[in-house]
Length: 470
Image 1 (cartoon, one colour):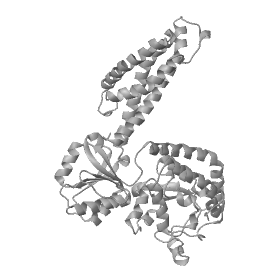
Image 2 (tube, rainbow, N blue to C red):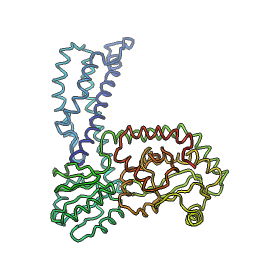
Image 3 (cartoon, helix red, strand yellow):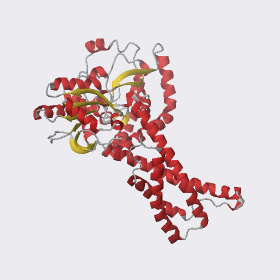
């Protein structure tokens, strides 16, 4: 794991999971208490009482204290390089401290012998559960860092010696999550070439180690990252920014200046991800009859084409992904795009094509669009992690390539969504692409869970009333 805020966030997640496992271990111990006593002939099953009894109060102390104590003993550090024996020793050390505290509560609260049995059984169960959790975490992390597609594309900018020193100071664990797509020396690389390298590789982060680079050149390179929403990690120097929020983080034990113009990794971001998955699944279940209606209607209205329309769209940082929609156009719609543009024109200014009454849409497809049922398959993209429920709409790759202003690419710095401010406010009422982008950037700059919730609430009447959908 990386040092600094990312590692701290990961540790907090693991501590929350461990707290739940500690409680679960003692609940299991409570459930096994009377069956065990009956098995050894100490008690009849008809005397079973269950529950934690007075031990409940002890657990309210134990559950939060143990994960914190484990962190002190280094239980959450270096998960890939630790032996099981080391983890076991750390668990035992932490339990010695915690048991002293809990022991005082047992004496003070005069907890019964039966509850003490739960305490005695709960401790080894907790150790077993946490060791299993650590093994599962190790397996998941190893799978993630070894998966080429899951690695983050990064560029390292600096002199060759600086880059080698930087890589030498970071652990293999950290580097395993990177895909270093290029090494750039800003002293002999133009800003235009630097920008093209970022676009070509769907880069998510750039490390600037430009100790001897001209300040003006470095500032321009950082601006390229800033305007596109790409994280810029600068090893030294203070840069004035227009949009990005400067912050410090640690990497390999070295302080880094981070210029971030997207929402920072936090509990809110984690909650958004969890809510996306749960929400998408629930919506799919609730709307499944409409999926059947859509499939049947498409086959009856346009039998020669597929039910689903699949297209490569630009995901986070411009990374291509396959987006799904219910097909609303004739099978050769893509081939006829240039013809339609020439004959009918474009109602949206800029690189994006929008048309109120597109002649390529067949009869039933008009109803699908008007009711927004055609968007339902994108819930599958949300489950896959390509999209979010709320976020800037994903655009076709050929439209993204036509962006004329660099700051337009900053809308690619977050995961695209099914709905956003534009959809909730009435889609076809906006005809200027710059205005659309401004709404997306306002969403990114002011993002919060509450904002997502408000957008989803506004989307419901917009869909039910077919506001702006044609």
